Length: 389
Figure 1 (cartoon, rainbow, N blue to C red):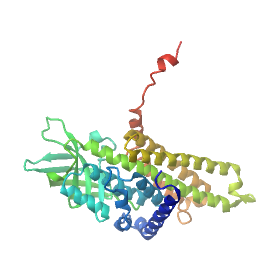
Figure 2 (figure 1 turned 180 degrees about the horizontal axis):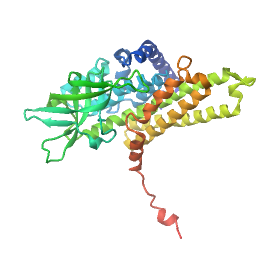
Figure 3 (figure 1 turned 90 degrees about the vertical axis):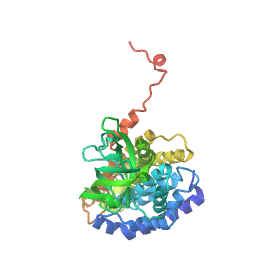
Figure 4 (figure 1 turned 180 degrees about the vertical axis):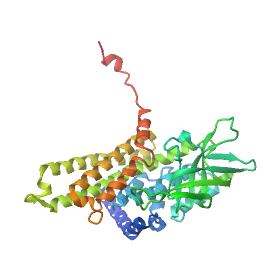
């Protein structure tokens, strides 16, 4: 496994030092201002992490490094920063890497890797949610090699700070003909905020309802006309795997804090950790997170090898990770008792709120489980092994 052994430990230590410094520098202020800090991306890119994540050799780059970065940022207790970073390092980068085919796309790609260009990904609409087939944003050919993009996206994370957004819409030549799902790159100058959302958590990850009405050159289309579902599926698979890695890092952070508190807090004449019910509760959660960690990096290894890791596999991993993360945050907050509910004494309530996004962002639990259900296969031995009266 990559990044194992002595050299792996050194690389992890290097990552931790870079990431911890950047999180300390920008995290608290970003939470107060409610804007994702561009400087955070610039610092990590300047350290070489983006080019290291996406070397030239393969279309998937180095997914294990991507997972490590996502995990380690979340392990700093900054889930909002981790989500925003994954939109750059995984969602937008993977789409541009695989489907970018012209000089405009390559310029954006180079900007993303250099940390000078921030991208967003817009799929969900005011009434559509996770229903990609219900998208109403229209991409209309104008007959002169240009297209018009017109529609709204309700949940555009990084909408206030991005330089471009990859937008999923329907390519419509004639209303009497079937519309074709297509992705198009829209510059920030053509993205207009309808409302900046006030969210329950991840304050440093700005999310906006936006409107688009733009005329763009044909080079703005990412991939081919009608290939929007392929682009979205590829990009979201990388995002969802990153979410699972973020869950590992966030859970490890919360469990570490809860364990330290349980060892130091005295109740009924002894440390909390000596009470079997609490000790075993933490042990069970830690065991489940270990299973999740092995699954996440196993999936990353398969993705790197180019086989055995499907979008459905990642969907199942993501929903499992998201639900476990929410439970871990809740239980760890409980270990702190009343102090866990006080924002000026512990970070537990913020972690609890932030973790809830994972069950919605990148696809809801129900959408993920429907993807898994679509791949359920009957065992052909049923007729010979089962005999019902």
